[in-house]
Length: 517
Image 1 (cartoon, helix red, strand yellow):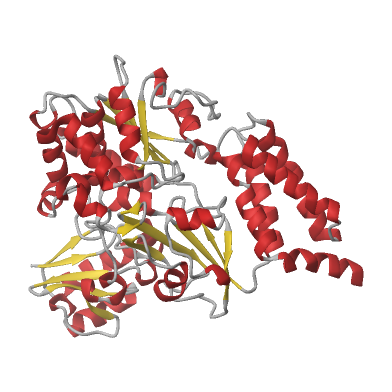
Image 2 (image 1 turned 180 degrees about the vertical axis):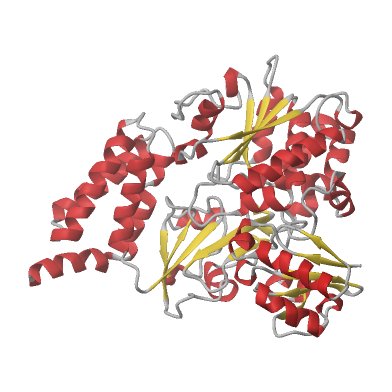
């Protein structure tokens, strides 16, 4: 019986994957052929979806951008045996877009049946948790520290330091929280893991719980991710029934339970303290720090809060050893980063690679340049509050320190591409508008600064700006950057000031237009 893989990832579903799967089953039945359809996750090459694969003796063979109308011709060509067809990309792993990657966090995504424990185990699953049980808390904490893993959601804080702080804290109960509130524009890595390899997150959370002495974990996800949430909720039940969650996890003598919580869509709840407020049943408002969550977090107890990508990487680090992970990357940016390429780009999708590539290589070589065919003008890195970078900075190395040196952030790994038709004054206005809408309202710099900033930028766009207007924007940005309680207000200046610095002509254009009138 031929095994045929049709992704159940939301991107593939939006492009007709369900209809393709139904058409394959119907065509096989009409021809008297037996086939098994496996609904796997996406491999991340969204520009190829739906990417249908067939298992053959020499590996899986892929067929890209399949529609129901292609199915009959695929059977005619003998695709169930990996035969040639105009849509065929050959052996999937050998395609240049996949062959150039270093897949650690996403090693199983697109490969396994997401809810099959057997599939997960065959592809290396649970080895990290098994080793963590053998190493114990101290050994596990040391491995995480030595790996050099840093937060994959924002500030890039060392994961090992955070875990050790919680492990040393004295309390009757501790918690682990996974921040899966993936609200940044152009990001989808969290969703891909939850839909395509959910057990990796379950395993990473269990390892964290055992290492720091936590008995309960929460995964905080978005209401906008119904497919991911349904898959992950099912994965929790499967893992619990198999003994990977609950009492005496894998004979460790420790208890660790896991619960999925779904937020109501507030961007600010991606900030760790607002997220904890939401889990506690309160309005998502930022807390003042200190105390840090590692000391007094959820319900006032010591709490580990990590991004989903950080926790999903933990099983690989424990299974293969800290040094194997630390061998990848450059400088203080160790390991790999799942880079999410979106916007006006030809090859949109997720590309996991070691830190060290240049921004230009990511956009022009991996991304293939703009989808419109026009020259790339700007790239926003790190979400809607990330800096806009011009082509002149494309030689910048993609890592935390190099980006910090040019006033940019890596953030969650999102890269949104714009061609030369973009109006950067309008993008600066949008940054303030976004901040004004999403602010929790607790601190004055963010609550008032974003509104006043939007008004001034709108004045510049409509009437042309005076020197005083630009000085006011700079003052507002300075106040928000250093006076806001959290990163939402503190990061709004990044897209605004980078637009003013690198694309001043778009702001002058408004003044020239008004003068001409």
